[in-house]
Length: 121
Image (cartoon, rainbow, N blue to C red; front, side, top):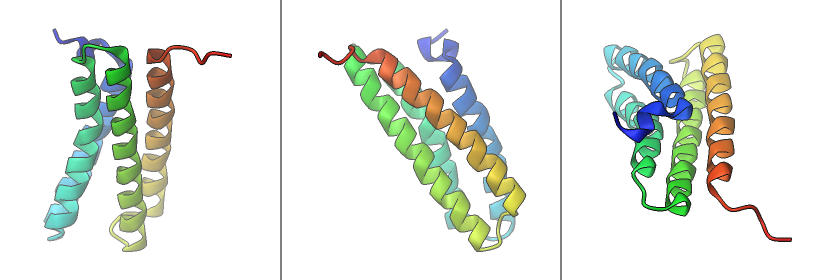
């Protein structure tokens, strides 16, 4: 088993990524191939960066990958808002997914901070 598989933050990111992959499939069925691929890529990047960071040789490097994962979550959130405004996604689905992303971002940030040394006074 790889280290990342034990991380709750990675498990949650993967679960959300799978849900967003299903949304990408729906976008493809509506001939929105470019949108689908970009969403799929950004969503997968969240769990990918957590996994990649877990293989780092230092906590500081791992924290850097957690920051990239959080930025990918923000990119994903932006796309969801865009899809809602384009009427490709219902408001309720958008708000539900955004709430999941927001919770995931809090979890990523808390984990990132736990990897860094406490600030010196």
